[in-house]
Image (tube, rainbow over all chains, first blue to last red; front, side, top):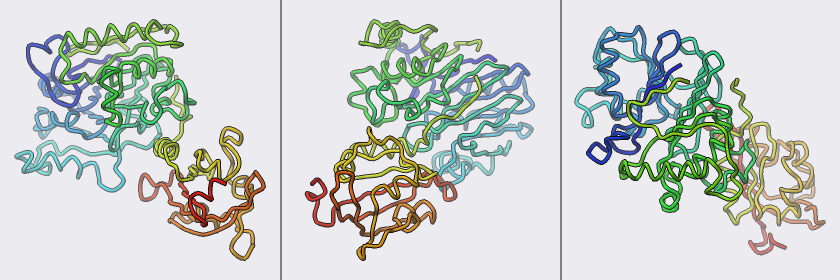
Length: 290
Length: 140
């Protein structure tokens, strides 16, 4: 299983000279399975370039797994080339809402006045699926699970397992909401713990610095300290910090990473201990072998 | 590593967070009826701490405090507001008396609401309660 980052910016696309190293496209992760099948995690602006690549390959089927429907995870969908090809077999997955179908919720964006073409007129006519609640299912020959996690609105984290290797994707997640110290609660009370436990690769929200988080409690994102602690508690082998704040320049992100390494190695927080495994900052174009 | 879900439903996690921050006594039960949390305000009414009791199966908490109606008759589980919320899936309100663990009898008003993440998916229920004599009496 391989993953490629096509977008790792959170909230709003942030192109420009200050964000060239890590990139300015919003969330999109391509997952390639051993069979050659492709899963696309989130449809931020990064999906546009992925779509151009897939248009050349013409895969038999494309599954897009949306963690939630905030625009930074959805806005690229209308510019995803396979969407406009009648021959494409597209399946779009997303967390169920208490009352409205996934198709209706996406149509809120993909329809006038927000988009010039209505979803019902799109050539590929995708099939929409609610992700099963807290159950694994088989997709493209692998096991997938979607666990509801703490973030405003219906939001899931995805766990993909192929031949004993596991990738988990939680780009928007605030496990510390109402908890503070993640080490102070039993794991069964920690949002996202079950899905992330033992993952070989975890892509996780790392939007705020510890100082910034103090002003953003309840916004649905993690601080540097939260993401490192969460990954350690969940015994994740390799952590990739993603969903970079649009106001963070490349230099800012280097400083965030330096702080994350301190915490990861147990040097920046009392009692945190050191941790085996790797930590990295996601950047556009990054490729990861799971 | 195979996916194993040993985790509380997210709605219960959030309900517990709300309960932990309220000055109003509050219970949180899961879909099985297990009392998975009660807050500090509830501890003062019940005369016991959550740290001492831990999670309580439905049969235990429904009888531990000997709930009775205004005629002094025991109230069975399914007639308690939380029982109605769990087994009938609808909100309910009642006045009742309990025998707290500290030996004090207390008269309470209780409102219970089912927690649904989907019209046909019940993940638990919450109950808020208060002293019928006034808020300060609940603390005695």
